[in-house]
Length: 252
Image (cartoon, rainbow, N blue to C red; front, side, top):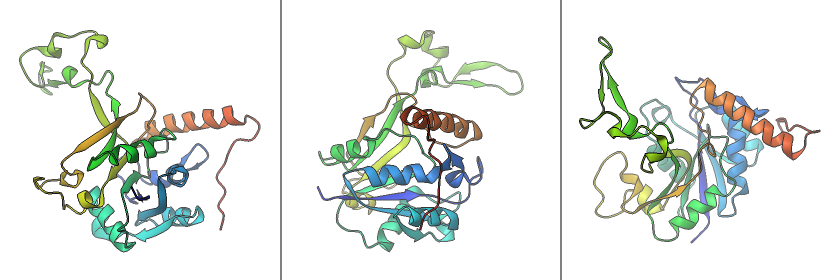
């Protein structure tokens, strides 16, 4: 398989945590950690930041990434991931190999995650996402609570909690964790035959996953997420060199 391009999506707006992609995490702008991960992945030969945010693109260029100015219509709340990725790939004239879609608001991911996804993609999948165990937020424990009366009933079925009250007895269930999404050029371009139209059509027909452990990927959508990621990254940096904490310095 040819080397991949990593497209880092860094939309400027965010209702949950404004400016999250460039917010300080572990002493650096959040996006810097994702650029590091893309630069360090052996299977990635080209790294680009797609954004409508000037600061995010400045950071990308300072770290050796190419940048793509994202148009306003692809930077709104309603814009889709695949539309933004297709725009970036087209702007960069990329036609050589897989596309790795990375989110700038994910500063914590396993060091080998990108290449694990690319390896799985090379085994015949149209797309590969990373998945984490849902833990205590299991679908079997999802319920509907009436706002007026407080009455509780199952989200689906007739038995609350499916009759399971110990976490250890829940069947395995996983959720996409945002750590990595790798797709073939054909899937991203919606050229895989037999795939029904829809918001996930760009994932193609054969969709595979790579598993992460609970907490290995941190996707920042709220202030609490930012605090947790900051603590995790600072602990890692301190363990690596307790006398020289790593802080962000702009270069170039």
